[in-house]
Each structure stands twice: as structure tokens, then as C-alpha cells.
Image (tube, rainbow, N blue to C red; front, side):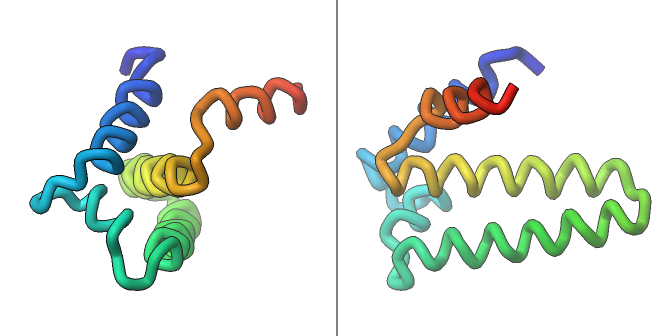
Length: 95
């Protein structure tokens, strides 16, 4: 995994937000009838799945569900017109 994988993923999310291709799951989150609630529900669902995977000591599922959470978090940041710099700044302040 390269260090810039989050930057690359966020760039794709931003592109989907701008272009809204019909066959894109990411674009569908930006146009969902529930609005941002669709992403918030997915974050809740994926968090529950991560907790269950962790409880079961299932490393592969922990990695999978963690990736789902990060992806949906990045979509939420894009919805809020935020970016990775906002996240990085907040994390840096906590160091």
C-alpha cells in the first residue's frame, strides 16, 4: 500500500461527486434520496460489522470493515466540502 492511497481514493471520490456517473456506487451516495443520511447509515452499519469482526478476532474482516469505514468517512468529508487536509490537521493537533 502506498502512502498516497488515501489521496488517490479521495481524488476518485471527488471526481465521482463532480461527474456523477450513473454506474458509480460513490456517485449514488451523493444523489441518494436520503441525502447524507445514506452515508451516515453506512458508517453505522460498517462500524457494527467492524466491532463484531474484532470481537471474533477475524483479522481479514477487521481489515475489510476498516477499509469500508475509511471509504465512507471520506465520502462524508467530501459531502461536507472538507478534504484530507482537514483530517490531517486535526490528527496533527492531537499528536
